[in-house]
Every structure is written in structure tokens, then in C-alpha cells.
Image: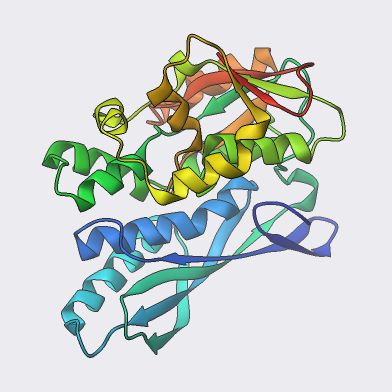
Length: 305
């Protein structure tokens, strides 16, 4: 199925979820890098409402130019995050890479196929809840230039390393059926995927003032610290995204910002949205915010106001 991860049905009440993800370092600390990579790899299972049960490490390591202690810290970070998620580390594979370290995991989960959270099936009037702040792509780009203070870096790193487990469980509890996670394609790209996988002709309206942002995102965006991934996202998708005249230029970039281990977007009826938001805040998902809604038009497009 064309969703966040592959699903293989074993019986009426049980299916297996399979997914894989890995990337190069986006933070300075090896241990935190390992945690973020693990949380990111687990996210697709949570986005579908599944429960990850096993994982295998994937490592590309420049053995000739990097100390093995660095690799040990990365793997420790990943292992600790898996323990937090109650996922068993059952093996892995490594290769020597002459360029730079790359780390991630192949994850297997389980799910009741009757309760899968899908990207499609949006309904007019659905509210859209985003569970994490935005702007980590821009912040991480500024980090490469040594411009990010320790407090901001810590907040962004902690968010990326936070599991989407609680948000996924709450989504199932309140009866959400439509969900995805926000990663490399940014808010616009992933919301357009939701529109494209919905049979009914619908659109999405985003309230730009409701988008939760990390500290200093506005500052760095105005400085022009736009990552190449954001520029690719905008070039690919901007033809389907309309901005009202009140949306400032810097804020337009936010909907195209590529996220690493970003939050979930839950689509649910207005009466359930308030319930879900309350439960999310009670469970510590404090950045959860209603960012917009599904509308009847313009069809197959996003309007940002």
C-alpha cells in the first residue's frame, strides 16, 4: 500500500509493518544523533498506528578517518531510544564508507489491519493537528554555520529525539483514522500526499499564525539560511500551494522546511479534535496545535492564510 510504511496482512486481526530509514549526522553529539535516527526510523510505524517490536541497525562508517568510540556512542544512543520504545534490537549490518558516517534502522512492527491510520480519506471539515514544532531543517542548517545557541540546539534536538509513540496511541484512542508524519517533504509536501490519496476532491487550508515554530526560526529564515532540501521541496510543490498576501515571505518557507523526525499530523472531526488536543497536552505533547482544516475548495490544493 502507498503509505508511510509497507504492510503485509497475516490474518484478519494481524499485519506486519516494515520500514527503513537512515541519514548522515545532523547534530554534533554522537549519542544524540543515534537517538534522533532511531526515533525517526520508528516514526513511520507510529504514523500508521502500529507498534514497533524489532529493529536492526544500519551503519556506514569511515573506519579510516573516524574513531570507533564515536560509532559506539551513536549505537548507544540508538539502543537507548529503542529501549524507551520497548523495541528489541535483533541485529544489523555495517559497511565501511570512505566519506562519512550514516546510521539508521530497519524496523518491524505489528498492527491490526482494521485499525490502520492512513494518509488518505480526508473529509471536509476535518481539523488538522500537528504534534511537533517546525523549523528543524532551517535550525540544523544554521547549526552548520555555528550560529545556533546551546539552548535552541538542545530544544530542537530533544524534539527530534522524542518518539511519536504517545501521539500515535492517543490518535487511536480518540478514533483518528487519517494520519501521517512530517519529515523530508515538509508540511506542504506531506499534506499534499494526504490530498492526493483522498478520493474525494478536497483541499486544505493552513492558518500560518498557528504553525508552532522552534526559537529563532524566523531570524534564521530571514537571514536566508534555507537548506537545499527546502528549496527542492518548494520548486517541486509550490505550484499547488497558494499564499494569501498577509503571509510574510519568510513564513512561506516554513511549510516547505524539511523536517527530521518531525511530528504527526492527525486529521479528525471538530468534536474529536478538542478531545485529542486535550489528551495530547496531558501526555506531554505540549506543541500539539490545530494548524488548519480540510476544505471543499480550492480542490487538490493548499491555501496558506
